[in-house]
Amino acid sequence: MADNNTFEEVLKKLEKASEKLRSDETSLEEAISSYEEGVKYYKECREILDKATQKIETLTK
Image 1 (cartoon, helix red, strand yellow):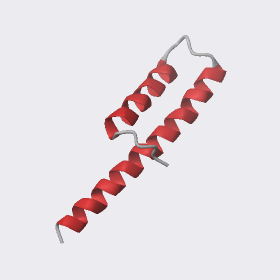
Image 2 (tube, one colour):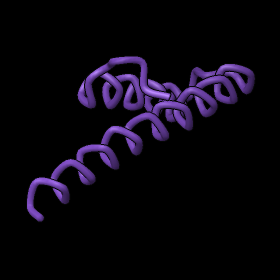
Image 3 (spheres, helix red, strand yellow):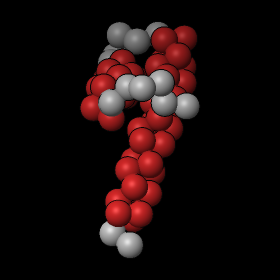
Image 4 (tube, one colour):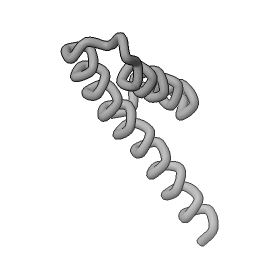
């Protein structure tokens, strides 16, 4: 799922999507789109963190 973005880059994208959702000026359509993007970025962050956890576990064995 991750397309070679760093965790920090994906997290920034997630934060932007979250900001759009919280804005009073966001239309329903934009909110739905931002929510979908947020879910995508959350999953991407989770994948990066899971890989890092696996790597750490492997190194500490």
